[in-house]
Image: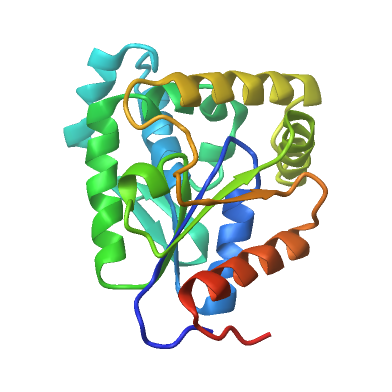
Length: 228
């Protein structure tokens, strides 16, 4: 558990690298706030799909900004205009389109403003694609978490199956590769490691081992004592 000093922790990395799972457990271990930025982009994507808006049509997607209110609640609940969409935003139809939504500058600016406000008054763990490079460039700790495409695909497949979300391993692997390309090639705030980030490959680590590694990095970077 951290002392009363406010610190910010940024965990970036490609799709299905296990960032959210690790970030949630790290936040719990430190008793600080977890901000799932990816869920915010997913909620926007879900809303666009519900409105039958083509997620590849930037102009039409931007028109939705004034209509959307996204809230992150305790127990990882995600609300979109007051509706609980926690489960729906993890469906394959959202996963296959979210990188398009996340590539649009005005949507990113809209959501980044909210994310930065969350981190102003409280210690936070925030994960995403551009937290350390753009959202929180002055974060106390920056981690770039990676894993092989094959490992990430299996993890996402197992997660979907456990939640009863229909999918195939092949479609998940194709989706991961596609999202990697889109995320790293977008013009505004692309996926990349911040120069001062610590690279963490979790391909052969369990969740518990990954969390321990992150906690060790935080302790080393901040000098705070973390209880075992």
